[in-house]
Image (cartoon, rainbow, N blue to C red; front, side, top):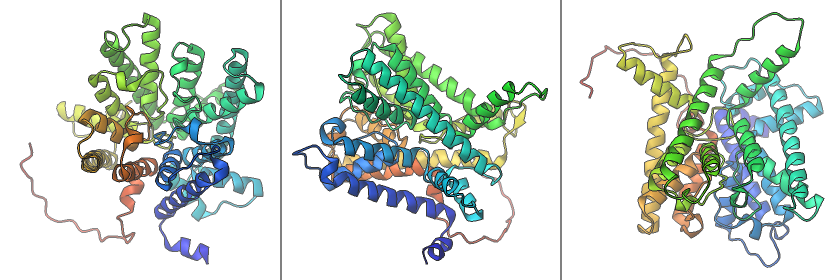
Length: 455
């Protein structure tokens, strides 16, 4: 019966329903007394907010993670990171692989929608690569961080060090932004090992599973000495990696120029550069921070809001409008300025469909953010200034998790607004738009064309 009901829904709506059910389940788990520290009471809205933030791998929270949740609660949060980060269909594929079950057409369609792909070919192999890389990366991070925390004396026992290392590794790789330290990574603002490896985990989780799969294939092909065939990266990987790198560098440089004479004034130059780069990396979708965000210049907050709005790459752990969307928009603007009809990159033309989608997603995302800002202002009776509200709303939409510190002071209406934005940021603009689609095939009718006056 359940399968009959599922077959009546579109694949997109099935995925959305699965994430909604996941949020409800994790909300109930976080409300259990065993998930909380002795004497702690957690209101339902705060449990829902935390669950939505964990499943959407955002990191915004209305309560202190380290003061509220027990070890069991932290394990529940890690499970929510994995559920929301690698995707429900990736975990489903893991189950099917273990049980030796055949992955049919419906399951492949669900994987395609969940991973934001446009074709069915190669999805099962992609899931295998994603699972292997995820387990390998998180295990490596657990061992490295755990050993480092114990050797350097950050923790008093090896078991506690490994526990903290595992939580931080999973949180960083899934771009969840939660921490057990109580101050994000402020205590590690001078520890370049923790910062460097955390940045590596964040980037690996944010560049997207298809890119990771191609990089894995590239490394594997280089190891095979019996092949002379030159490996060719796809246009998606080239655009994603180049856009990601450009945004990280530009963000880091501008943050340093803005904060060098402001909040970074007391730091040596090398620490300024490191904190600027870390803030730029984390601003894309991770939410971990080595500086006090509330002390940053308004110009930096505006820049970081823009970075959070753009977010990570498609089919990754992060949210936002995605790197390829902003890349296509910039390429389209440049091609229009040059008098060219079709945007291009790396000797390839960008399809009209992708160009139109990018502008539609961008416009709709701007509308959602503006609506969120308006809703928060109405709920809070203008208690906070525009920069703080803009920062909070874009952080939720971009599933980043950075905050100027106002999250815990928000009222019910604002919390619900952020929950909705975090959920939309997790499922992506394509799935969000599909909610309003009837699923019925429309007749292909073409009307006479007439030009309008634009601009």
